[in-house]
Image (cartoon, rainbow, N blue to C red; front, side, top):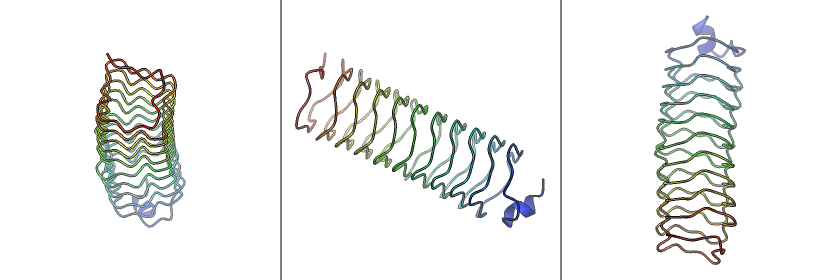
Amino acid sequence: MNIEAIKTGNLKHLPGADLEDEDLAKTDLSNVNLAGANLTGTNFTDAKLEGGHLEGANLMGAILVQTDLLRVNLMGANLMQADLTGADLRGSNLRGANLMGAQFIDVSFAGAFLSGATLMNVNLQGVDFRGADLRGANLTGANLKGADLSRADLQGALLSEANLEEADLREANLAGANLTGANLLCAELEGANLRGIQSDRACLVGTIAENLVDSVSTV
C-alpha cells in the first residue's frame, strides 16, 4: 500500500484496504472510498474525511480526534473503542454501526442517521444529537445527561436504564421507546411525542412537559 500517495491525497479509491495502525493524521481524505477497509487503530487525528465512504469498515480503536466526518457513510461500521473526541459527525450515516466503548467528548451528531446503531452503556454526556435519526437505536444504560436530543427521532429506541437527566428532549419523537428504569430527572420534554412509551420505574421528577400522555407511568 502506497501510504505516501494516500497522505498526499493522490490515492482515494481504497475499498477493502488494510491500513491497520497507520498514521493518517492531518490527511485530506475527502470523498475517500474506504468501504470495508481494516482501519483498526488507525490515526485520523485532525484528518478530513468529509463525504467519505467507510461503510462496513473496521475502525475499532481508531483515533478520530477532531476529525472532519461530515456526511461520511459509516453504515454498519465497527467503531468500538474508537476515540471520537471533538469529531464532527453532522449529517453522517451511522445506521447499524457499533459504537460501544467509544469516546464522545464534545461530539456533534446533529442531523446524523443512527437508526439501529448500538450505543449500549456509552458515555454521551452533553453530546449534540439535534434532529438526529435514532430510530430503534440501542441506548440501553447510556449516559445522556445534558445531551441535546431536541427534535431527534427516537421512535422505538431502547433507552432502558439510560441517564437522561437534564437532557433536552423538546419536540423529540419518543413514540414506542423503551424508557424502563430510565432517569429523566429535570429533562425537558415540551412538545415531545411520548405515545406508547414504556416507562415503568422511570424517574420523571422535575420533568418539564406540556402534555404527558396517559401511557407515561412510574412504579
